Figure (cartoon, rainbow, N blue to C red):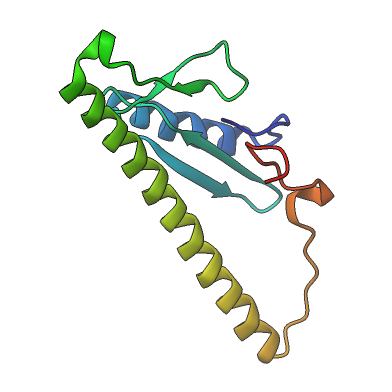
Length: 133
């Protein structure tokens, strides 16, 4: 899952590409957000060899949840499902911690008299994976 727009800053794009390559090389799912002076980029890597979250470029998100004990056996399937849930919960925890800290920082800055405006996601509605989510 990547940005839905072109990145204007070539250094920012190069940095994102490097981080994604590291995530691939070490088979580590994760989330990355990089910020430059003028824009921000993000990416998620959800799949891993030890997880039921499997790469699938035919899907809109680039991965799918695949757990079939007929293919991998009961023990391996359970291990992969646990790996997928570990990834999902850890990324959720990281997102919540990041939100809490950034909201705290914004509050501290406002209390210090710093006024700012910010339109999340360039005014686009936040995307969900499940309709009505």
